Length: 212
Length: 220
Image 1 (cartoon, each protein chain N blue to C red):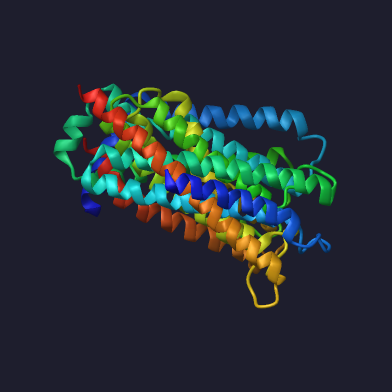
Image 2: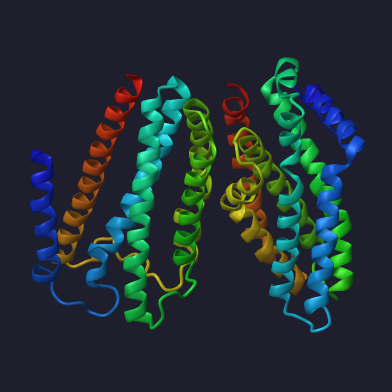
């Protein structure tokens, strides 16, 4: 409850700061999209990695709670990846004139959406909780290979439209931008954690009810 | 381990030649698609990037029509339990992988010369072309063998195989298409070296992952 309130205030402050505290955009390298687009993409990757970790946990201990956590994290990852795509679409329309440009990063996130959409197709296709858990855990672990390849190799190496070196490096960002960006990252990460905990609590209650 | 994989492989080949289901499905699908494609664009003369994409699309979808067979047959004939008792998971995976490699190999031996002939393809760098095909089909076989094992344990088998394979095979398809483009347009082997590296790395990762994870798919 306290976490929820704190998170609400924090995210509101981030939104206000993004538009009032951070100075207006100066060309492409510093525009306000990074406060929403970048944290979303980052949290999506974190969520997919968490999904893989819980998948490994499931295969080691065969506890269905771990399977539920893995699925919840993959679901949230998909949600944040969709948000990153949508914010990117809007920005691309304004900045480059078209919604979709087949830039390496754009293709990568499309592949990422496909990879994890297939994960839910698999979950829907298997009856029996244990078998579903085992099969989807295997897939969630295997899916990390294309995920890492697309996010960290293809997009980082071959992107033509996305800027490089905007975020990392000493003089990459103005002070105000850096403060708001890091706060936004913390905010979105907190949002993910809160959603994850809420959904996990729900899944646990459901499991207990099913037992009676 | 290798000897046992070979035994599973021999068993699969024997079973396959009783019905020839997978071989027929894959080869007929490939030839039909190839004929349809060359009817549509063969006389027009399409660019090399389109040729490379068409070749890999034909290989991919032909593979999707038959590569799941190795595992689905065991479930349908209810022989999976016997196989589980007879061989270790690693040997089963190895045998099925060899079988799928042989299928993809047979597919390419027939489809690639036909494709080159019917589509009037000019290949500048043959060594690169053949290396890309070899590594690409290894990647195709490795990833699809694991997905076939997953799919054979699911309730809906048909559509799920293509849906699950595509994401895991996308890196292979991208590497194959780009590498083939490089081989069609340049005689220098180094022109497609980065794609060869991508394919080798990805195939290696998927092979190790499959070997580690297969136990959890195969055993209940």
